[in-house]
Length: 271
Image 1 (spheres, one colour):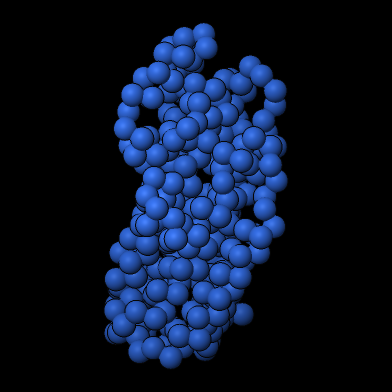
Image 2 (image 1 turned 120 degrees about the horizontal axis):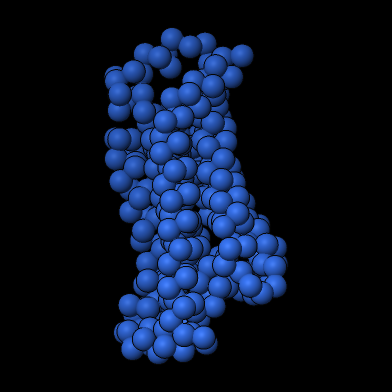
């Protein structure tokens, strides 16, 4: 009963932020796909675009998401866009996980938790459920928007199944970083810094994934980056999600969730 009250309270409290993020993702999808018109119109075969991108330094192409992709093709361009969608949604998930668990300390409303006849474990689970609902809403909204605008640009075979695979992989990455945010807010002495740590880890692992192919020292770290577990270009070409990647991501989520459930009840909340 009281866990349900915390769940609904968090959904109401985060509604405005969810609407803002939703609008931002819709605009990102629409504006991103609009730019494809200019690329596809640059030449009947896109050769001029490919030649132009080939002149860019390889490290810059990798960092921006071009890599070896043929962004003049719809599939190649969509994979490049998905890199930005994935990064944005991962940052949202990490900030949400860190913020929703530490908000009482940040807002000086810890008494709200102490006044409720609910365990700390129940608080974590209720807040995680509320955050997970928001991730699902944001992911589905971005997916529906993408599927809605694609027909205006796709003059070839239907690629809806590939798009579904892409967003399924992004969902795994979102949940990983959501639980990472929860874990950081649970173990850090000053949980108000959890958001900064979580965002730094998202950006850092993204850069490792982008730059690892060009830097041998980073290749050893690439396996630790959730962004590298699901290769978007392979999924866009029709491959199914890899079972090993899904199992690895699920185990990490369980591990980070267990850490949160263990650490949060044992830490002193700052009033």
